Image 1 (cartoon, one colour):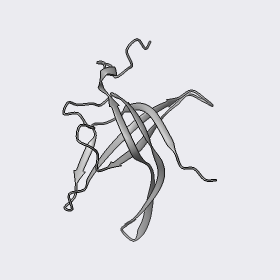
Image 2 (cartoon, helix red, strand yellow):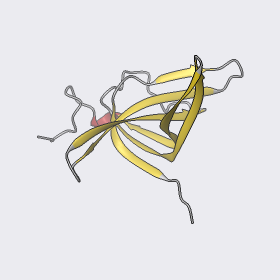
Image 3 (cartoon, helix red, strand yellow):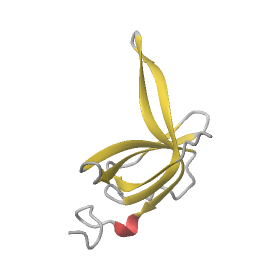
Image 4 (cartoon, one colour):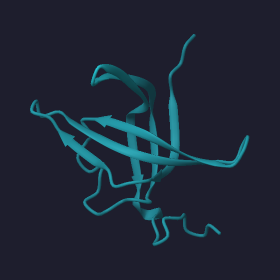
Length: 113
């Protein structure tokens, strides 16, 4: 059995971008930083897209550094560039929850040292 399911908990690395196409379809783009300790300490920046986000998913106030939960699947997208092709791996979200209540001036979780 195959399963393509991703759940991320991280922080928004840059202000979200909302694109509206001529058809009326909207696309929310996020960059999410995820910290890992194992097998070695690192920070990954993961691109996330959400098609036709419900109103209120992206707050009117800046949310860079806010905590975020993302549930979705991994997708590799291909497109033409000049005379060649390129690709990108991204998370296609089914659900996004921005946690503005956890944002402080340093972009760290309250109480984190």
